[in-house]
Length: 252
Image (cartoon, rainbow, N blue to C red):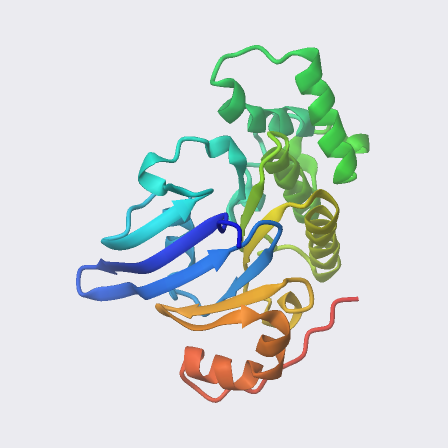
């Protein structure tokens, strides 16, 4: 079996006496789409920060592309879209094209000049996310859904192998959310991207992902999406610590 792209082994983290992650282990195979669900304050964002190398676990190991995260230097292999992306400063004086191009700085290094081939790549990803017609529009003039597409393009422009999305549809309307999920599914299926998406949208996520991890400080489930759907009520009742009446969300 090939080495997983991501291997998280026995992570522990606390703020003072408050446990945030308690013996969390999970993995992501190449070309896989993993959805991570759980209540607010369940440690999902802390886990993402650790995978991105922004925080260190107090105990446990993280391996990325077969290397310990302590020695991992190839950051351009990972594209990241945070939940803060769509609360962008509306007055920020940058066009969509400039925002997308800024995703190349990790690969080029700060202050390197963009070449024609770089701009071709920028235009290519803008076409993929269907934003070419808005290339010269100020980023602040876009709707929440369009801004999210711009930030996905920014994450993709450096040709990453792993895309990490942290609550990417917060504050985006239902129609744009569905279009966003469809776009991510397209990128995953047609470009072989490995994807991790943290989301609150439990009713929808299991119809897009291959596997689901349900986290509330510890893992309550990590397995196939079909099994998660089958056992959803039981898993969520345990993870959220109360009896859940599931409301089906069907995005059309």
